Image (cartoon, rainbow, N blue to C red; front, side, top):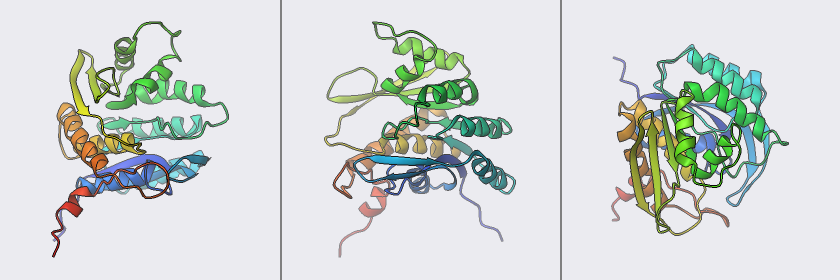
Length: 274
């Protein structure tokens, strides 16, 4: 008799040798939430716990072939798209996910520690805006990243334009936008979820001391896992934030750089000392 399988999530992103961001972070988070991750490598990173020094972008044909072969074999419950590195890869991924419009897509294309790719950042942002955002169920972006994306369609404005920019993303076809680091008390982290009606929910969390890498990757992967497990978006974002906060509270200093979230904190807590 065949056992029931875990929900399958197909994630596109870079391979990080540290396991702090990208594919390795996604797979760990999916597993912690009872899902099985299927991974499509879009770039190979060179770096340590302090910084990413270089990135080798994977050829678009390899990216597309990885995904097509998997999708012909297995049914997936959710897509997650992280940093993909080139306009060609963005276009290929957009074409692939368009063949599966009923599968939720979590878009988290910004990794602040990624090196600049020969001045292609603006072109990549435009491609993301035009090809991926209209197909997105939920996009995750920090307030700073949202401002960067907004500059591809408007001139800088002197006042706080975050609500205006958020609604512009939703108008492009993105069902939900989840903005992290929205303005608030300096001792807290505030995250705000938007849909076509405006603000859906706003959550505040006590700011943890220390410098971390991988918080955003953990959060977006946790949201994808919650959706694959059948939760609705507002509840999924709440549960994912709690998981991420706990992973950060148990973060480990694996090297001389930043702290790495512990996505398996719950497993270590359950082991009682003799």
